[in-house]
Image (tube, rainbow, N blue to C red; front, side, top):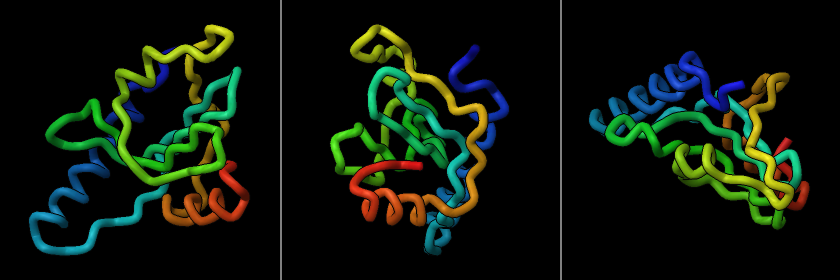
Length: 119
């Protein structure tokens, strides 16, 4: 199974382009819902990604939780996630059942309140 199939990459790119257009117009960015949830099956790391950088589509923005209790909003290289292997050698997987029900900022608040658990 491909980690990030083209329809997901297209949605991430569209969100990134929408926010870049708003920045160029001097407007506030959109607090998008996460498009995809990635996780390490042999560890506690989780990523909720909402967009990619229009100038560098290998850079995604989202809520990153490395399982250490300090979730943060930030950027990550997709190529690094695709190449990463957990402590048992398992690759990062996509949560096929994840359906976002809130904007990314809501997930960030929830994760901080829960002590670092992104759900």
